[in-house]
Length: 575
Ligand code: DMJ
Image 1 (spheres, helix red, strand yellow):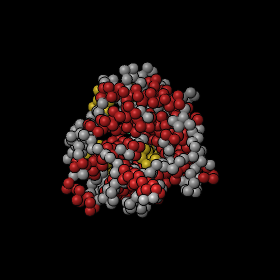
Image 2 (cartoon, rainbow, N blue to C red; image 1 turned 45 degrees about the vertical axis):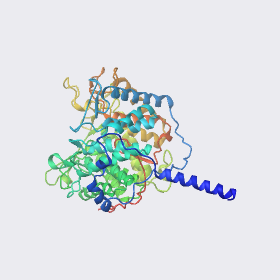
Image 3 (cartoon, protein in one colour; image 1 turned 90 degrees about the horizontal axis):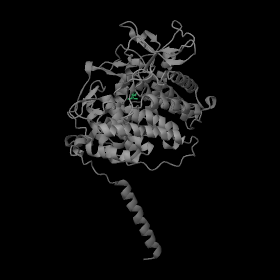
């Protein structure tokens, strides 16, 4: 044989071997005896699934992304590392006192579980991707080992569908996205399979809680909140994409169809839904039980590469409603805030509402979300990415310009709520109106019930929440304006000063206006998954996570933007 031919054959063999290795990546099942492939895909369902569910073999990891233009937002190394040190401080206390428990109580140094049937990794899984992004290899390896050896969803007990989806399923999916480690994909598929039992075949809505072992579901009172119904689509759709199981997609999109049908003329959604898929007479707000409905309208549009206009239509309609009914300003400093609407009347409540000048910390997610929506989904030329900061007249349409301005002004309003004795923002504020106008030297808002008794009201606490940090991060990435890093640093410094415990961990502060502070014995899991992640990303080099390639679920787990491979969305018609 000629030398050339031999060289050609050798090259061919090497190429063939690489292709074989790429498509047959080794994966070893977790050694956990409770866990097997049969749990995640039971025999009786395998045949059925083969006919109705699987549209193609599960996807392989995508090829590496093409090289990106050099970044313009380099790290502030010192501040970034200070946030990493805070994460290590919070995590190491949890690991020392409560490794594997769902929740952590840092003052009494113990852990507790949710759901009654044993832990399902709330804290560990919620924290995985933050460790990966921060480059904390040792912590990550120990957490992965816990997932491999201890995590099981074969738990008799009722678990919140909402929390389990956003924290555990979302955490597994983003860990999979960042590592392509099949351990996470298989656990995610197992969990997703168990959660499918939550969807009511008649109404299409998910139940509030699911027994993960018996796969039975329940909702107290028969209904769910709008957030519970519509904050699972990013997770189930990506799960469908990576497993090839169309059932995950269909269940999630059917909910959106039901909600679209129930929609109010003002584009807004009351916080409670009846079991039959209609809205119950309830408050409209961008805070608890309502927030992530609006967040996921935009993010579903972004998630599938802006190929599903129905979500943009729903989102744009909702933002019109927000501007028409909820965006208000205080009379003195003209702080922008997002009010709540109380339903008036009994039978005709859907058309008569009373605005309340009340805002939860949770609503502050909307500031960054409006800015993100303006620069991704309201472009005059959708084929060209917006500049940083965007050139409003040249790059954004009218909705985009409006949303951008409101987002920035609203973030200023949220940052104003950090003006407390501790520098931490309270859980809830009431804004002053013409009737309750601020006097000289007073803030333009107050904490309802504060100072009335020795027990501070619920609104006075700071429970390590992320929403202001989240919006600051987005504003920084989308404007490049250093003032947002300044806000992030002030917030982080206040957390260090008042929430950090001498014996390890961080805790809720009971009254943001009282120094020295009193603590509540809880370190929320979203402190690790969201608050510290967003603060870290604000100071990190922008290449650590490219905003044009991922969409964060509501628990700050980055999931990839993709165009569905084979699944054809069925919910396409806005009504
Ligand atoms: C998180 O669990 C999620 O961000 C959720 O959408 C709202 N509440 C907390 C954080 O505040």
